Image (cartoon, rainbow, N blue to C red):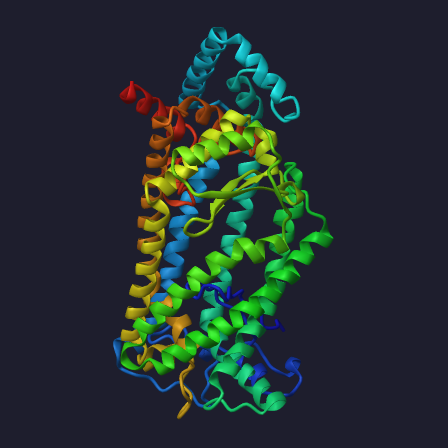
Length: 542
């Protein structure tokens, strides 16, 4: 007899949820031995194969009271069909990418582009041999790459490894997606949400003397705590395999099991510490705000977003990584000079021990007003030269100079406001909640359940479309930031820097076009972006 398996809920974001699993209705409502019960009968199966579809578990002790409304008739069925439809599209794209990872010939477009970069670098080296020697001496500590060897042979050498790494990640992702589909559909049909809510109500009544009508927010916190803990347990095998099998196999993982579980405990603690009060305040505002509560919710979300953007890099991130000031050297002086040139109010420069967990590299900026900071991963400093670090920062500063940071923030706020406005229109849609098993007579519909079901059903198609549009918008910003770096005169070093980062991170060298357009490629692929595109920018600039 399977036990309930819950999905993870990120308390910082109510927009994304999975479904959960539980045993049959009789097991949930009886104290007798579960082995005394049989599997669902043909009549039980019939109830979920004819319209309107109904969940096996419902809050009422009687059979679901059917309704003739469109919402009650089609809500559950359409949600399941949309879930399967999205899975089918994404699985087809994954299959296309899987075929791309089986290619054994180095992509011709990338070869031609990188070959041009090597030729230009060779020509530049002949013109200024003395400068080249100084750079080589300054880069002796950077052991991961051969600075004298052309990039193309190095990329070709690691092409097979990159294909294997991509294949392993994709196959594991496809397996996880199949499991997720099975879990989502089954959990929808058996009615996990009403069951886990009733279980939370029972816990609140038995141990804390809480009443569902008078203490909804407190019971909601119990509800979220239960499914967060169970969801963490169920997701743990996938995270362990990804970290200690795939990432370790390809030389990226540096975590120990002790560090992994320490991070997990810290994350759960922070979720409760920050997420609990956040959810409580959100629900309180929805109940207090009346008909136009979405206005107050938007204002609250805005303030909370600013609050999190402020404390995350200053308070939370140092709990997981060590930040040290960048040592006084030529690189530090040049970074400050670049910031002054662009009028970026840089106040502090940090190096983060990213190698503590992974050999992947990164760099980011944060801060408000005139208190800006830049963080470099120690792995990034080992993988590229100082000139290339400056070019990469020039690209990132381009996002700030071109207003991409603010535009992304504004788009996020508009998205939040629109979603909660639409939620306000559906907040009283009782038939929607009944379709998913919340049909208890004279029982209030929990606000958190209303939110979950709205974002999982009515808003889900809208979210998919908007997410794709935001991906396109992000790619446009990346090309604009590339052009900005070209205008700074950093095109050549940015191109070589990105090649080295892709080389060391085993990035996809021949991604499928449709997969790249849809699946997690807000940054365009290497051959398409920052190489051939930047060469075109160079020609236009010249």
